[in-house]
Image (cartoon, rainbow, N blue to C red; front, side, top):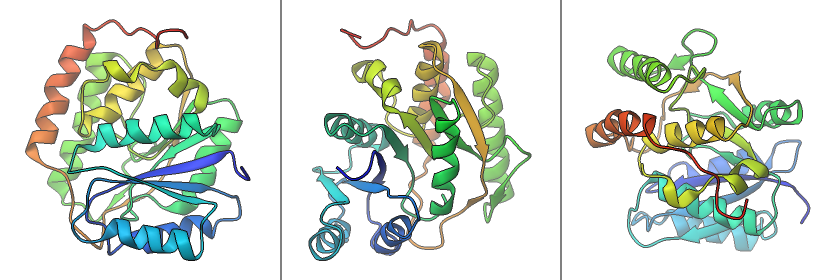
Length: 244
């Protein structure tokens, strides 16, 4: 294995973005492997990945294909289990649509090198750094994070952020079987588990740019799951994975 870093990207109908995001990550100075977790995209996303894998990136690009749209959280958990089995030390999460800038990956990596167990690409730790979102969505997202921060008592400004770098020790400790939320609430639940298990987090300021290609996966159901899930989470005891 020629890299200890891997970026997990969950996909569903991302044919407009997937080749460009893979090439952008592979063009970085530091060597990042990539794991695509595709939920049966009917638009051919997986085939684009496999073509690139066979033609150019056979040792650095990998894909897990799942049947049907099973949710963001389960996609990441499948990816986490795969990366732990393959002994990566730094495991990243990011979106396929360039809302997360690949050039910010080294910032998250170096935050972990400098002491963080979980580095979070944050839209809100340095004011509000969001481009091309309607003002209503910005307000909803910002105050949703404030709600989570107050209910759970955690000192994170961007609680729903999906651009992150974990040290493998964090993922080895979290009991994935106890993670309840599948949508964007999954991001909150993973951060909360990380903190409750005694790991150190750091927020790294980024600029979030809304997608230009493809369709957003946000829905009112995802928002509702996160809202009620946070209340339930507050009263749940967090235990490490068995045998850890």
